Image 1 (tube, rainbow over the protein chains, first blue to last red):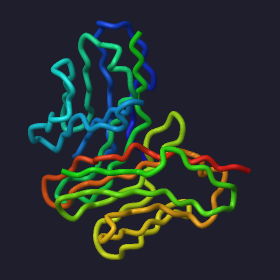
Image 2: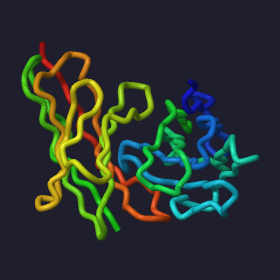
Image 3: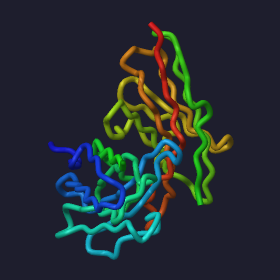
Length: 116
Length: 115
């Protein structure tokens, strides 16, 4: 079956522009996560969605970052007024419902974002 | 709160030699532990996980790991390295119990396999 799909795979943009990153989770997975992977900081949690519950946004680094998940499936991570420190690989993961937190998270291949 | 320490950002082994990648964690409650592998320009692939039960867990590609509570460790091993094992490996911890979902990752260990 299909895994987690992310698009675009690469994005280059100028400082100050807005970008949108898309994640299509595995069918049937109600939990969705965004992480950021950068050279200096390693892998960092950004945001978590579970079903229709309010998302946990505690990992978002600034108010320039936001995310939504429409219809409990596809998610979009938006970065406004991009800065050079936003350059990183943004990884999306999904898992089965959080009734049992031992379910592993399955990752997409990521979007490599470069801010010029 | 939880944290993960991976000893050695780079490890080199000869083809056919033992692979040992070290992971120590700290956690306020019993943890769930995971090892992921990342190949260049790809996402993370789950190698194995420990949740409850048997402390020696076997994963894909011949890897295994042992949960040692007394040592707060979850080291990853493979008896004989193959060239295709060259990749970056991440240890991750997640708190057990309802409402815990965030993975906390170590900094990663890049494994090189020398022919």
